[in-house]
Image 1 (tube, rainbow, N blue to C red):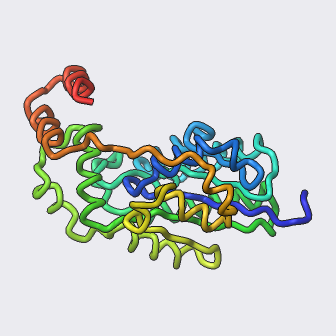
Image 2 (image 1 turned 180 degrees about the vertical axis):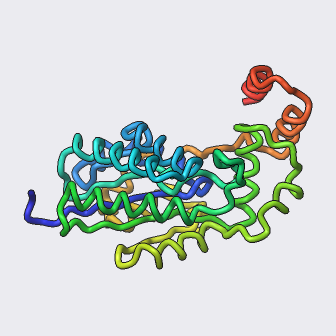
Image 3 (image 1 turned 90 degrees about the horizontal axis):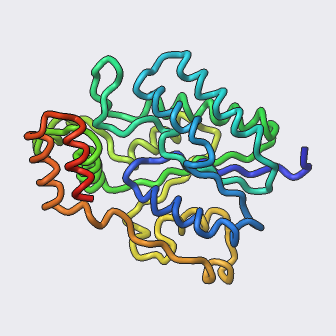
Length: 265
């Protein structure tokens, strides 16, 4: 065990708030940032990420235990580092708009996100000791823009047959990502929770990862040498969404629907 407390930043979501841009930026600059941090993303803990998503859809105690053991197995196989960054949006559960195993519409992150976060905290302390300095970090987005992005994603990934107005009406009490993060901050206290709005970093060279680099105090001279982000999700236009909606309504075969959607991407 090192004498200096290990810092761990857990970027736990949310979906459709620039997470892919942030993860891609950190991954493509992983070697340059290695003296300052060890970064682990989706492909580094596939099992833990999958178990977190399944728990949100099937919120049974044994599913939470499966996530705990998968996350523990990941932690047991990584070396110590003064700064560790973990990024996986499923650590907050499933994207609203999906359904649980019982058929209930998922309209909030709160219950699964809080329980998953507490498992993450306890396992990090088990691995790195009680003095580990843990921070949860959530990227957020203006509610209406976020909900439209969620709708566009679901049109592509599952069979949504509602137009946007009808879809939106299903979520009269749905919190936006910022309000979700604020509630989680209260639930996870005294573990600090930091937030960064996607809109505040739209013109930043590093995109939403800029907020994380600020949090880690990465030196300006290194930041200027890092590869900038490539813009994400530019193909999700209104015309494309309309075509996905038409396909969802007209094609009954799952296999044929999947192939037709793939042809549009």
